[in-house]
Each structure stands twice: as C-alpha cells, then as structure tokens.
Length: 359
Ligand code: ASP
Image (cartoon, rainbow, N blue to C red; front, side, top):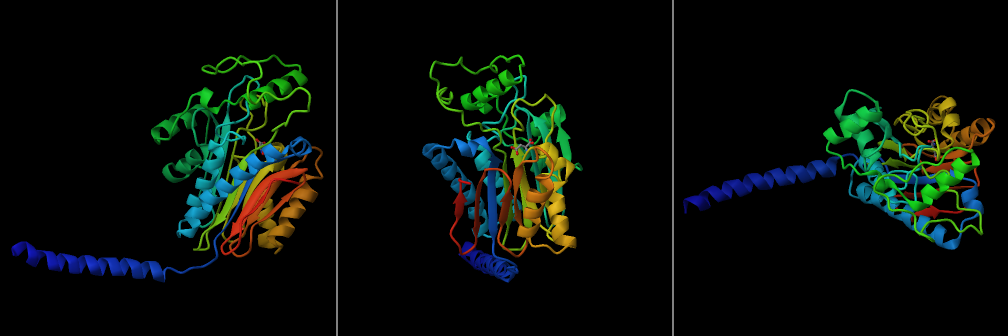
C-alpha cells in the first residue's frame, strides 16, 4: 500500500519531466534544411583508366558515407557528428587514401593528416603525421574538444590518441597491396630505393589481389583524400578532411589536409569547405579560407567563389590541381574541380542523393 502511494507522485513527476523535454525539443528553432556533401579525392589518371567495377565500388562507398551523415542529420543530430560519421566510413574503406588504404611515405610508412572545424564556434582541431590511429578525424576532433590547441603532430599526437582512448592499429591494418604497388611505381620512376614491406604484412603472392595488371596503365590512386561539409537543422555548418597525403612523400611532409584555412574551413557567417588536390598549392593560396572570404566580403555565391578559386587561382599555378566541396547556412552544397574527375556526393533534405563518380 505504502509503495503504491509513493509510486503515483513519482510517476506524476516523471510525466511532467518527459513532457517538458518533449516541449523543449519541439520548441527548438528549426533554422534550416539539413544538407551534406562528401568528396573522395580528385585526380587525372584515375578517370582516364576507370573501369565499370571500380566505378561501382567507389559509387557504393560514397553512398554509404553520405548515408552515415544523413542518418545523423535526419535525427536532428549536430553537424560535427555528421561530418565525423561520414568521414569515418571513408577512412575505414581501403579504396580511399585516408585511414585504412592510406598512401605511404618513401620509407614505406603511413603518416596520416586530418582536420575538422565547427562553423558555429570557430573551434578547430587537426593532426599531422600520425601512424596508428584508426580514425584520424576523431583524433582531430578530440584535439579540438579536449586540449587548448588546434594542432598536434607526430609522436605527441600518437601519444595523445592513446590517452584519448582512440582505437590504435598496426601498420598492417592500413596496408593495401594496391597502394603499395603504386608506391613502388612512384619510387622506381624517381629512381629511389624501394623500402621493405611493413612489419606484419605477408609477402606479396604472385597475382596478389590489387596488383595492377601490367598490360594496362595502373589505376593510379594518386589522390583519394576524403572530406565532408554538413549543415544541420539548427543551421550550423562544419567541415572535415582526412588523408594519407601524397604517395611517396618525404617523411615529415605535411600537406594541406590538416591546415585550417587551406583544406578545411568552417564559419557560419561565410561557408564550410573541404579540399583535395596537390596540397602545396592549397596551402599557398589558403584555398578554403579564400573561398569563404570571397563569400563574406565580395558577396559571391558559393558556386561563384568555388569556381573562381579552383579554376582561376589554383589553376593559374603550374601543377595546381584539385577540387573542393562548399556549403553555406542557406543554399545547397556545391563543388568545383579542375582535374579530370572528383569522387563526390551530396544530398539536401527532401531531395534524392546525387552521387558522381565520373568526370
Ligand atoms: N591534399 C592532399 C595532400 O596534399 C592530397 C589529396 O588531396 O589527395 O596531402
């Protein structure tokens, strides 16, 4: 009897709590339609020699990454969660040059870079030259959220990843035969010595999967960096980028992908950008910030700014190759590239996904 008397007030209080939570959720302003864009790298030779099976595999991977982001956004989730979720799918997929499947430096080691930025707060996190973190984008986010810094590099970043409890993997996890053969090709072309296969990787078998058919020009996978821009229903935008860097790079080389303002930038008042291409040019031109500045100060549309920077500014530098995805707080995501192709996908609330593997 006594317990029954106690139970009714408890249920009453719980009811009031639940209805106030639901009311608060309903009252939360819905500022925008959600939107997201994903890229999986831009390049030249890739598109000259792409066969149907390869194109289908990339299409499927881009669709899964887009869906991971959409799932967060449709449930009212935050832009940063959508960006991180979509990038993790691509980092885990060995087709892309990020996380598993990363390119190697000329010593045969993976050195991965990533960055993320929150357009609502201008907080940013980035990481350069990590060896063991399964998802470098999550490490960039942990640096943003749990340290007073924007960027950590090398052994300090590896150590912080362990402290942050992020999943660590041996070199054999990141290794793919396809990417290794590509490295050997690059080093042979440059007349450099060939490194040993990484520890824990089995010896190459004859006709091993992923070894390019010598009768045709190999699918080069020279690029393959991944990136995402996303807008949530609260009207906030974010951007993230993750890469293994350029194939056969010097140890210690850092490209644009972890540089805030070069490959990644997000500010609600202007735009969110993620880039891919030859990083040195994107650093010199501060590509991501440049696009947002044109939108903020010259009042260009996202498409005008993206096209101007990629096709005029980047393209005017010899060797300036690459592309971007761009999103603001109001309009649909756009992209621009000056290469033969860029793996890309986008979706806006209420519309069908658009996935482009071709030129
Ligand atoms: N931007 C990357 C870098 O220079 C490479 C890429 O986008 O594929 O490291």
